Every structure is written in structure tokens, then in C-alpha cells.
Length: 189
Length: 341
Image 1 (cartoon, rainbow over the protein chains, first blue to last red):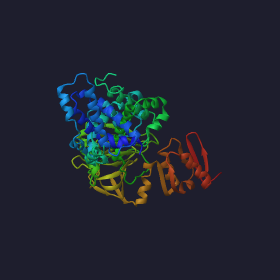
Image 2 (cartoon, one colour):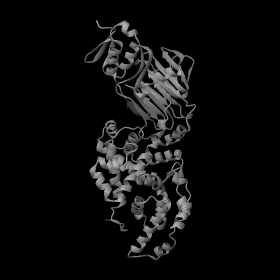
Image 3 (cartoon, one colour):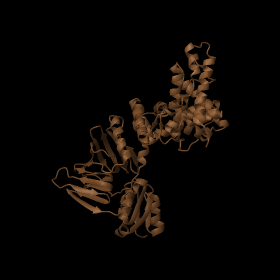
Image 4 (tube, helix red, strand yellow):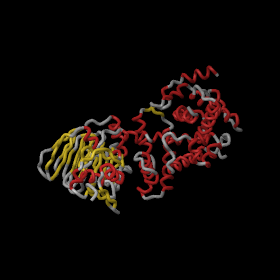
């Protein structure tokens, strides 16, 4: 398995749990996406040296270390943060709390997320992804320019990436795994 | 570096994500995103992308993230891949009419689920839309309720699907339907001014010169003359119904025949012992260049085989080289004679 495949299959399905973990342990919610980005970069770097046996454990340990680094690096450390630091353990519940949904629920969720998009964006996204029209055909059908179609698709996929990567469907095996591997990982390291 | 939290040396996630999505949609526009496309493939495609990817792992993971979402979004349309047995064609055009109401009987569970979500989507972009194919064209559309319609060559349909009703009008041509199961919202198909009610999930409807043709692969179809007081006619899977001036003829059709008749769905025309006149008429439904059979003897010749519907040239060459017929190419037609004169 390539590192890319590994990342997509093992790590991305955990995004929902990761985001909840970051939110729960960092007071400034505005930083969470940047943390997520950094955690992914670090996890990927580690995995390209060697694919880890316990992806979930690697992910949350990386997240925890990142948060600890951040606290240490901050010039102003609030009492609250210092206290949090002591309790900053990846709870096993946290890791298993990831939302597991069935394929049907997933499709329903996809559609619900599409509903949140502006009408034009949704229409273009549906034509491209559901009806299978190419960008050019979509542009022709709606009598808009191809760059316009591309722009709407970009908007749509960004929205869906946030929504989709935060849930995981039952077919993603990772979701089935228990948080037990976290324990084993911690014991071994 | 704008983040307050001083994370390594990467731009804010929002910016990187937008860049990643930009690359993704650019590749999609260029048709570079196949199912198994790897980041390395794309790097070979575009040096600027390779540079961007190489700049940081954050770039790479951001790209993988939008790529994963892009691929998962395909599951939205995955249910349209549930393809049943294929369907048919009879040459013809215009003037009859029917409305077809389908009460899906044996709907697949996935489709049943799609119904519910379809309701949520009612009022969205796909409601009350016109779809059409050009001569030789073919298109598959998915309605908001999850029903799938395959349009054959030179076909126009109007679809109006809301929370309350599901209505499609076949204005021209031929289409194959897979209707999502939803007893609360009958699916009606109007074809001209005859009313046809269909019970079933998978069938085709073609508008002919004097009526309609309904071919059922699965479930049951009910045909009803809108004007005349004719009893309802039921057509079951494996049957074919032909209406004309208030009459309905139902005949049994063996599976092989149904398969042949529906071969257009794969871009082919299949024949078995079919008179050349009928074969030519079939090809002419798909191509600007018309096959003209110049004499009766030629028209009677029986043809069998499988041909690409849009390659009338190849078929004409076969007639010439294989059957020794005289074939003359003109600007807008290909004339076929039984033997060289």
C-alpha cells in the first residue's frame, strides 16, 4: 500500500474524531483546522519513513504532542491551559466516538450536505458528479463558462471535504477497529 | 505565515485547502482524474503541481483530502450503476401519446432509500428539467428521487419531480427507465395523449409514429388509453406491448430478443435474422448519413450480428465486402443494391 492510499484509507476516516479531540483540548476553535493540517503533515511524514501498525494511535499521539508543543511555545500560558495539559490524554472513548454511518446514511448525508450549498453550486456539482457530465458538458448545458463550472466545483468539494471526512462509513474498516490498538501502541512505546 | 499558533512553516489550512481543491478541479476539467489516478501520475501531468506537492507534506495531505471527498461523492451516483437487463428499439417517430404511471413493485432497497432523500432534494436543481440527446447521442440522467433514465438517440424528455408527484414526459424518441420504489408518489410518464400506467421498475418506452412501445424487463406495467374507454392492459416482465389507435397488442418476448432490442444501451445494435430494411431503419435512427436500401431483394436479406450504432460506414463496408452487395457512398446517404449492376 502506498503512503497516499494508507493516508486516505486509515487516517482520513478519523478526521471527525481528530477534530473533536482538538476542539475539546484547545480553547481557540479558530486554530483547529490549522492544527488538523499540521497533524496530517506530521503523520504523513512519519508514515513515509515507515507505515505505522497503529494509525489511530499515531494520529492522536501526534495531535497530543502538537498541542503540548503549542502550549510550551506560547508566550502567555493561561492557568487553564496548564491544567489542561495534565489531563491531555487521548481518551479511548474519544477515538471510538467517531461517527460510523452506513452506506445509506452516507448517501443521505451527502445529499443533506449538498443541500447546504448555494443552488448554482449544487446544480453544477450534481451534473458533474451524479449525472457524470464533464466540466465542458456541464458548462455547455448551463450556458456558463468552464472556469465558472470549475469554480463552483471547487467550492462544492471544499464543503464536502469538511463534511465527508468528518464521518466515516461502515465500509471503512478503520471505523470497526476498537480503541484497543491505542492501548497496545502506548504499551509498546 | 498568519496563524496565531505558529505551526511549522505552512500557510493557513483554509488557503492550502483552497489550493488543493483548485488543483483537483483543474485536473478534473482536463479529464485527468481516473479512478486509480495517483498523485505521481498527476505530477507527471503537470510540473507546477509536482512542485506544489513537493513543497510540503501539508500540501500533499490537503490534496489527498479533497481527492478522497471527490471520490466519496461518486457514491452519490453509485446506485445508478445497478444496471438491469437491457432494452429495445423500433424505428419510428411521433404522433401517439400515453401517460405512464409507475408504481414500483420490486424496488431495490437502495433505491427505496434514495426516495426518501430524494424528497429532501425536491425543489432542487434537477426538478422540472428538460433533457435531450442529439442524433446518435445517449445520456443517463438521475432524477432527484433516485430514478434513472437512459435516453437513446434523438430523444427529448421533460422531468418534473417534487415531493408530491413524479412526472416525466417523453416528447420524442426512446428511453429506458429504472424507477425508484415509492408507492406514495406514482411515477407517470406521458407520451402524447394516450395514458399508460406502468407498474414496475425497469422498462423502456418508445414513441412511435402511431403509438408507443413499452418493453418490460422487470415488474409490471399498466397501459391505459387516456381518451378511449378501453380496459387497462397489464404488461409483465418479458413482455412487449405495442399500442396503435386505441388498441394494445401484448406479446411475449424471449430474453435473447429483449437483450437484442435493448442493445442500444451499450452503444450497439444487435440483430438476428433481421431484414436489411429494418436494420437500415435502425441505423438511420443514430446517424446523419442514411442507409438507403435501393431494391426489394436487398431489403429482404437477413442480417445477424452486433454492430456499433454510430458506425454506419463499417456496416456498409461489411455489406459490400462480406455479402458482395453494391454500396455507393453519397454525401448524405449510402445506397445499397443487391448486386453490382
